[in-house]
Length: 333
Image (cartoon, helix red, strand yellow):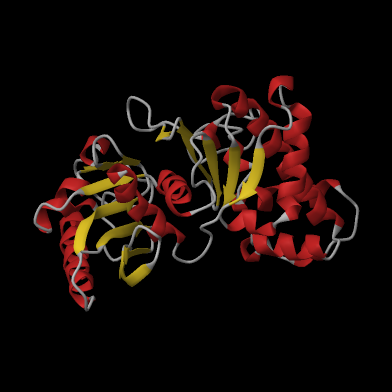
């Protein structure tokens, strides 16, 4: 009998999920609102509604199959404990909460989902790790035992695979490459520190870079007429493709910081390849070429010209669902 897994991607706005086979083929998908359940008190209703929606999805498939398990990608998820811990944009305390103790914002999501669906195996990890496992099971990292995944979205996520295994660390939170310091006393980061890589290398980071460059450079630029609140990273890509000097310098600088940081991290895990995934990576050579150049320029000699910099093989609207479902197939293998 055919086996399918459910992949669940929990975002701040919506939760998307779908039935996926071992080849990455999606048979059915659905979505519920996450933002409808904003507070700690709403969490039980969120679990109940998500389970009901998943039951409906399970019943929607017309052929017989075996449900192998449920894989979940979520912010601040801990693979070891099956929990979502103090997520920045999920299940916050309501205004006026008499006991806003952050230790109460530890959600046993894997157990809660498993319990309401009859004990089905349920695994959870953070969204960047889910994308990494998706790359290993469905994408361009098939057959690789040592690689790094960099997700370039609003922030910078990452996943590290060594000897065919995800590196989770003793507490489940290893691999926070976006929060290495690349500029002491640099830009403020949402984590509370200053100078983190993701404040420079992300959709948000390149936007900040573009505005700093417009203050420093006298070159004409189409970007100068756009208000900060109306601005997004895709506009920088479009401008760069048209030869805009500010936009081109923004990508060069972003690639420099990413390439230098990657050269350093290569010395730790010696990966076969590094994959770039997510919105900013879709800029293609605008981000790949400077990143590759500065990575090689700063690489320790023993690693020079050994590490491939590659695009993800699972880009697309279903990538997050595929990545989450891959948790199940990885464990089975």
